[in-house]
Structure formats: C-alpha cells, structure tokens
Length: 317
Image (cartoon, rainbow, N blue to C red):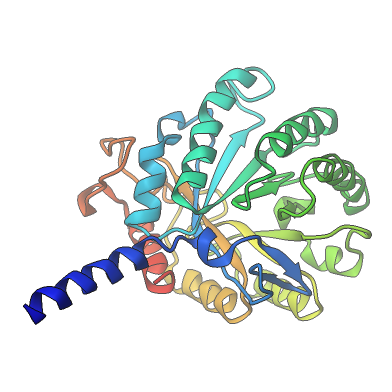
C-alpha cells in the first residue's frame, strides 16, 4: 500500500515538474544592466533554435515542429524568421507570411516558451516594419512569451541611421506593448557591437542588441567584441549562430562553436541556433526526408542539428 501511495505521489510530482514551462518559470522578462532577467530580476539565459526563412522552408512553421523543439530538444526560445527578401517574401505575399508565422507564435504561447518574431531583412523597410510590428504588438503584446527582432542583419546601414530606424519601430511597439523584450540589429551582419556599445539607443527600456556568429568564420576577434560590450554594460542577445562558415556551408567547427557557447554561458548571453531547415548545407539541421511536424530520429538529424540538440539538452535541464 505504501509503495502504491509513494508511486502515486512520485507521478504527481513528475507531472508537476513537466508543467513548469519556461514562461511559467521566468514570467515577464526584463533587462537589468547587461543581463536578461526574469520577472523577479534574476538572470536568465534562453537557449533555442531559429527556423529558416518562412518563404523557403514553410513546412516547418507548424505546431508539431515547435512541440518537438521544446519537448525533445528542450528549446526555451524559438525564432520565427519571416523573410523580407527572396521570392514570395512578406512584402510580396503578406498573407502567406502570416499563415506561416502565426501557427508558430501561437504554438510557442501554448507550449509556454518564448518566441522571437524576426523581421528577417538585410535592408531597411521602415514603414513596412512599423506597420508589421504595430500589428504584432497589438495582437500578441499581452503575452510575456513574445520577443521582437526589428532587423535581422543590416549590411550597409550606419549605426546612426539604424538608431533612428530602431527608435521609430520601438515607439510603435510600445504604444501597444510596454514591456516585452526588443532586439536591435547593428551594422555589417550584426558584427559592429563595439560601435553600439559606445552609443546605445537612449530613452528605451527592455532593449537588447544582437550579435550573429558562425563559428568556423568568426573566432576570438568577434567574441571578444561581444564580451567587452557586455562587460561594459550593453545587453546582448545572440539571435542567430551556427557552427559552420558564415556562408552557412563549409566545415562544422565544433571546437570554435563550443568556445562561443562557453563564453555565452559565462556571461549569461541568450542564443538561438540557425536553422531548422532541410537545405543541402552545413547549417541546416535536418535531412529532406524528415517530417515537417517532428519525431526526428537521429538518422534524420544532420551533424549540426545533433550538436545543437546535445547543447540544448546539456544546458536546458
């Protein structure tokens, strides 16, 4: 009888533990100094996966894929990369973009994980971005799950012009959503974090600045710029990273990637790994025969995907 009772209570405790989702655990995120923090001001590090461009890999924009990433990979954040270039992008076909984005956003809210709504562009489209983020913040701003990424990877824009761009969109979001986290990109594919550190955007709250790295290309030089920025008080979020070359292809540099992970863990920097897709390149995590909705057995996961899954399972316990 005692054994039955103990087994019952063990099962109840196990179910309770599983019910503690990242959003239940951390609640409304906030930025304090250089650190992302939970609702009580305690440091938080989010670790997860970025989906590929919605207009290239729409099949992974579904509830099942989100469930697999959160349940089996232990991702605490999922990035939905809404393409603003290449064929069938948001500007050309906004209804299709939302058919992809909204199931992911809603699934993340349902699963109790954080979701990055990413304006996946390389050039500024200020008016269009204001309209989009105004709509997103009006619809989803009440949920603590939501993180807004205003500009994926600026290429030719100066930081001064980007400050104006970001401030314009931040103001539009804050009319509907006073407190969710906002991520701001910086020049040269999010590499000029040192310039940002010298002149961050003034008069804003809960704003962080992005760094993107690809470990086989970006080594100590960029990593040190990121570390120096954080040490100087700048809140940094690595919203996209990979273990391969900056092209998305080439060799998988596991040693360099692990050095980046060690640094991000040491300084409490959140990160999302690129990408959940099935392209024939190094940084795509799945083979083409993988189902869109999950249940990805090891034979369906490419080496980069296996490294990401191993990293998430190791740190997101």
